[in-house]
Amino acid sequence: MPAEPRPEVLVAGAGPVGLTAAHELARRGLRVRLVDAAAGPARTSRAVAVHPRTLETLDQMGVVGSLRERGRENRAFTMFASGRRLVRLEADYSSMPTRYPFSLIVEQAATEAVLREAAAARGVAVEWGVKVTGFEQHADFVRVRLERSDGGTETVRADWLVGCDGGHSTVRKQLGLPLIGKSRDTWMLADAPVRTSLPPDSIYWAHTGGQALMMVPYAREGHWRLLDTAPGTRGATGARESLSRRLSAGLGRQVAVGEPEWTSVFTFQQRMVPRMHEGRVFVAGDAAHVHSPASGQGMNTGIQEAYNLAWKLADVARGHAGRQLLDTYSEERVPVGRALLGSTRTATFLVQFKNVLAAAALPVVFAVVRTVPPLRRALQRKVLGGMSGLRVGYGDSSLSLPVPTRRTARPPLSGAGSRIRRRGAAGLPLPSDDGAGCAVPGARASAAAAVHAGEPGPDALAAELRDTRWTLLWSKGGATAARAALWAAAAHGDWLSVRTVGARPGTAPHPLPDPGRTLRDTLGLDAGGWLLIRPDGYVAARGPQLTGQRWRHTLAALGLGDRRSALKDSSSVLRADPDRMLSTIAGREDSR
Image (tube, rainbow, N blue to C red; front, side):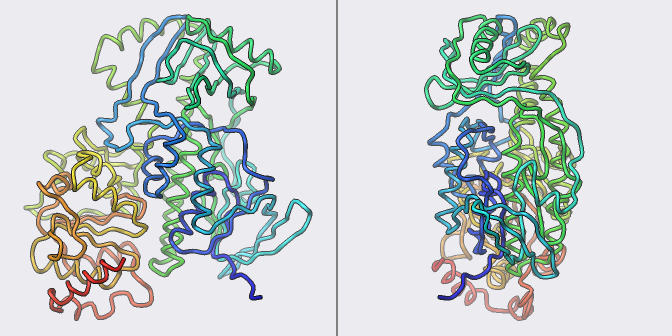
């Protein structure tokens, strides 16, 4: 019996981050082996909130529907202090267009189950009770030592190793990557049945005068996630009684906490690695950064990292990009992690609010917030912007190319040009309320699919973002642009999807419907204009007119193109008969 082929990628850790990495690598055709030191799936859940940008990513992965069936949508955050309701902040994503304007409250165990089923459907089953004990890097492979729970050992040769093995990561430690930062406060998490008159349509924050607690409603009726910022040393019974008493005092109504399904008292840390990649080995998730659970960012950030890494690793492994593409993993994600530590420090302070004098001022402060609508909206957007992940982008990445100018070119939407230079905390060009700026290099293209959701163009773009390949969108117009688009589709179809926005079937390669120009106006695409979208849905480049020369420059700047046949015979392709090439491309697209 022939031996199984060696894995191209070995993923250590089968939590949400490792499962995402394994799924996306397998979805792109790589052989993946997924191991985890635990005896089986976790039954308890640290993370409970899946935020909008992560929901967009899960949509691209094809699993968001299954997860939504198991969770509860949350669109509000309500604050109480000493028995008085201070303010209810409603979800306001008008400045951050998304097709998922809510956070999904769902147990991490359920999230992992959905991802595990999806990975298994791609041929990747978790090997439980198998841990990485060490590895050696070589020029062309990594030799990884594994140990099974029965004491057996194995040495595996893989092309790449991805460490998603948690806060005590063996992979990180052997790479010599320090976790820089410090320990913070001790909190308690609990999942418990709760009897309360509060409707389960909001996350609740309650301040008792000296400390704060939070309640998060699960989809299971009557079950809540509880967070205590001053847990003390009580046992389970004492914790239940204390939570009931203090929640009742903070909320100003009777709350009865039942026997917790589980509790966890922990001292969280605020630490991160200075880089996330060394040679053929990578780290992601808690293996790369640990921080406060105050804003529910850990799992969400890890899933984003795994997706960011997976498409890059697949492109390099398949020869569609040079090794330098892998350097952009640390380049893009380390600043996000650094910004995350800052935002979670702020969230931690706001959640626990230990300052008694400041707590006394809360009713006054939020009375103003309630009565001044612009201030209320600004606070809602500030809170949501920090948690949602929608403002994370890569405007300063080497994969975000400068926009070539042409005097007649229109910017994305009216008045958007002045916004292009604005940057978010992680380098994202900030979109306006109408979605302007969503087509700027470094921004997420999913915003354009959300501005007029339900119309053919935006809906077609949302579907296109589920493709594993890069996407070249171009607006039909001019023979030069048509030849360049045809050549790009013919030469790079394995890793590039070429879509002609607004074209009728049979008149251009793979038309993307856009009656009424809704999508083209949102993206700022005039005739012949183009937009290149990365496999993770972020814009890499754009221009006012697609030409063969501009396309070749773009490929060179991004290090893209099949290393075995890149650009060969490009001049003859560009001189070819467009009608004959069109029929060829149309046939290829129909067969996909």
